Image (cartoon, rainbow over all chains, first blue to last red; front, side, top):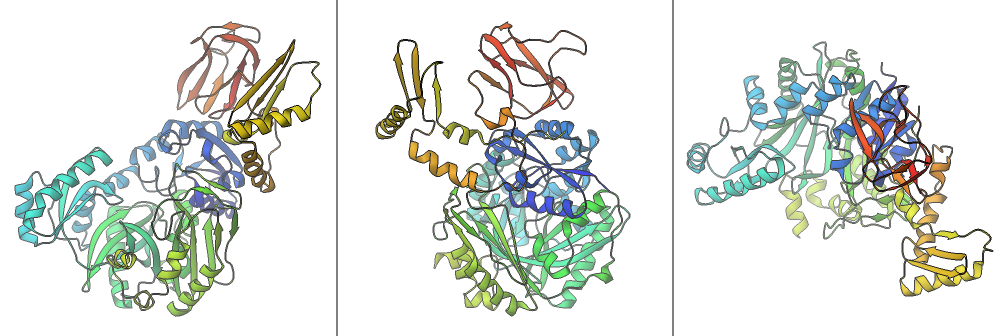
Length: 445
Length: 171
């Protein structure tokens, strides 16, 4: 096992990884920008290295600086967290070329899944249901029109290198397709430096369901059930829950088995999330995330398994410590992402936390790097806390979540706590009747 | 080999710097009046001279009230992992400090056994090489940002250096 791990991230996820390491007897190295010198992950880590100024491009995305930080602290492995360099295959390769272990999949698997077209082909070839669409890049408008005619409108124009909703445009009819393609191409070029586009059928009211998988390098692969992440705003997840109310046990077992076989066939190692849209009883593969997910705690709460610990173990070459039959799904869990944003206007609200009180009690977990007096830097993501609640069933979970949101105090900045309080009081949400379009409609009312 | 923790550069700037010449009795009332004047006028710096004696009051935030408000929560929060403060950490970088532009391993000479690029007392010109910092097996020459005399060298040969850490002081 590793003696020392460098955590190449910040905020709550850096703290989350630190916690897993400490429980495994692994010492930690925090890296940080000058804006994060007082951050909790820096305070708690065994060692810390300032690697650059506030802009992420010069600090948390600065590969030479991160490798230099490794050279002066000598960790065995690097954990990339999520975001920043977590899905950068070149980074993973550089890390390994310098003799450190990258806690994640191989660079080849990251490349395969990082390209949406090759990912879809790889999954389709292994029996995973995929969205009908162009089986590759679309060169021009006439090719796009021909394919859209075949699969039926509405269609979605997507950037091959896409993510976070960039380069994503919907066309309801043939007349709007040329404009949608031009806009998607321009966005993709600006955001990713790659304007390759492809086309997919657009589902009107789907749910976002994702399967958590875990694989070791000895060919053992298991799934840890699904999460429903349908509550999204501008393609950003706001609240996630597990298990998904829309799935029955047979659907769960069947989809899980299909995904496990595909992942085994790929020879994949580490944690992964295979994302699907679900409509009218059918699943359609969207993408595979080759990293730890923000919403991983809901899976931890219903399985009792520390995913970061397992991720570190398999990166060190250890076999999985359990088989599929050992996995038990118990109760229900919901995660609320708390952002430093105004609940009404959704405007970011950086500033100093004047007062902070996290909720507690049975079944309540808060993953956050906040403390009273902490200044939220303007240079990074606005997510400042995750509230995760577990209950014996969905109803108990909702009652507990309501109680925990009442207790949660974050003063000095605006937060999305009021939004979550409204959200969980809505009859549609209470009844579990929502899809990926629901939250945006809810916010308009 | 734990690299030292550094305090936030911005909080350092918010601390009010008071410099005075030798033999100058500190007139705290005068300083307080000047600080009030700065807060009132929005001035960021006031300097007074009387013969050999000079008094300069600098408020980095431009507002004295802001200093106490911003500083108290930071100091009130106990660090879960307090690190012994070193001379370099405790105070703002001295005037003339040359900060490291990168993280890495610092070398004072081009090769082991060779004479150091600079020693205390040396005059350096702008763009003279002061150190070499190794990062990712690449040797990066660190050049002087300006001309001056080396008054203090703050790093050890072969030691780790963080971004922003003071390498040396130019007088």
